[in-house]
Length: 316
Length: 158
Ligand code: SF4
Ligand code: SF4
Image (cartoon, rainbow over all chains, first blue to last red; front, side):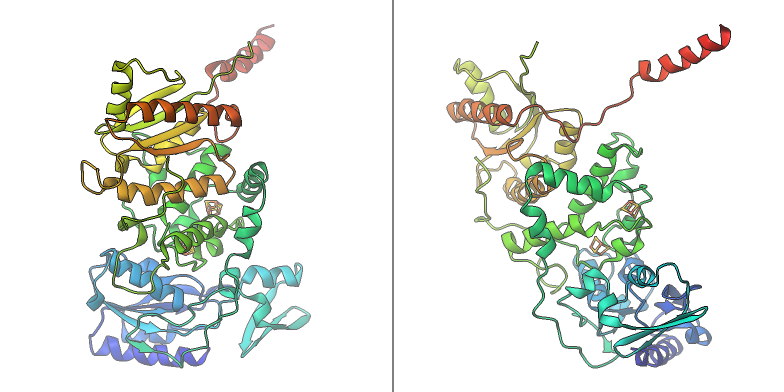
């Protein structure tokens, strides 16, 4: 994957010097291991900051909505799908974005590595093909990368960008034998009370910081429903009903749009698996309307269209 | 004192189901009194927030009724609504709201008897699941806040 770094720098250099774009959005090393952070490079002499590694899990499409300038952006499969959604929803024009497509092997979940280390602090994490070398004070571990992927990456079926201007490497084989909804079905099998409790426990530690919303490229409304005050549909307290209202509405607002990029979960400081809400909707949308978000630019998102013969067994 | 009666919020489209409710009344058709009607311009006007809002305020059930597909006053409002409702109902039930609390129907303004019949069905279904227990936002009342403060003051003053 590190091979992409050179390609990204080269492309950034070229695009900025030729004035094809005003900025390049990519990643640079974070201040601690396993935390690559987004960076917006505007000058050719700063392209050396750009890197690519297995910790670039943040969805960069988040920085594209409502932009006025022209930008280049590195895009994994999921990012590219969110760019498609931005195009469908007129958040940016195609000629404003230059997409550096990054075929992806899945991103590493830093929390899984931390958990494995049981309190030992990683000072350096190196990637080498399919392994991760984690070292710190008095220890060195070699981990199998695949076992430490983000949950959403494990079940990802769109690792290759669906839209791009140039590819940073050869397309990677798509995973075909994954069961995307195993967890959703497990919850579906519970009784009502069990499901209520399951989600109660799930969001019990939510501190309403809205990091999940802020990390999501789909959440670009000028005024989020959580900030509305007249009327106020959801209270700002940590009352469990308010918290659940927030989670239900957040999930509903991304229904038929969520690409399961995992940025929300990744951003949550309380490690709440918020994708449990969005995945149910994703599954329903697929089953009811046969739609997968952000795969093709043509057509409308499922809640922005209808078919006269849509299923309606639930209506009297 | 155990005569609990379900409280149901009904969002009725002005152009059909609301008219049907009116016609049911004019025609002296009997239907249970457990529904509180809120008139909306179209079933497409229903924002999921309204439904959550009703539940948060302690409604035992919510019933949304609009025009039959193809009959929407605004041509296609109910078609969009149908997709929203399907996903919302599924999401709410997936997260633990009992099936039987949320109801949807298409009732034209001429279908007074379908209105009365559906009202009975909805009320019975909600009665069967019982009083709402989940997803109710309870505000602390003034007494909750004031009483302890006063008690503390009393102690201090002696
Ligand atoms: S809801 Fe989460 S997984 Fe879905 S697009 Fe937004 S950040 Fe990505
Ligand atoms: S990021 Fe986590 S803690 Fe913050 S609002 Fe979202 S779910 Fe709650």
